[in-house]
Amino acid sequence: QVQLVESGGGLVQAGGSLRLSCAASGIIFRNNVMGWYRQAPGKQRELVASIHSGGTTNVADSVKGRFTISRDNAKNTVYLQMNNLKPEDTAVYYCNVPRMVVSNSASWGQGTQVTVSS
Image (cartoon, rainbow, N blue to C red; front, side):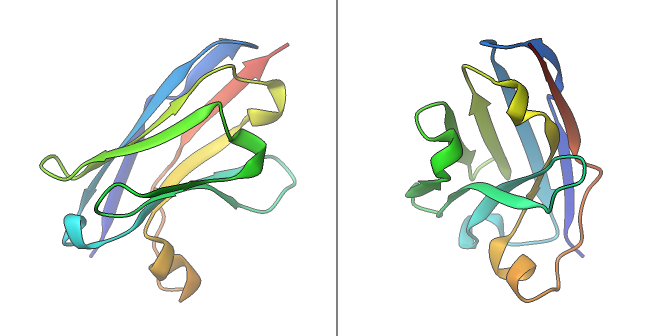
């Protein structure tokens, strides 16, 4: 069973930075695309960024130029560096395996809360 443990969230002022981490187990990490998702209050969960095993990334337009996703296959960990944070980035952030999310077979961790004050 896949287990995902997110960490690194917190309260930060607008313009600040945070680095999120997600440790994965129960999957062959290096074989899977990994993604960071977020869910703001009253909104649907959305995919923020994804990264292929070889390092190719995709980032949502809303965070392009501010967020960077990376991974360490040796540590089974995926990261999200978030710079120039805005109040609209406030959400609970989760990591997961996009192919499992799309197929409705994903289980979710507890997420990590990011709160950006203006």
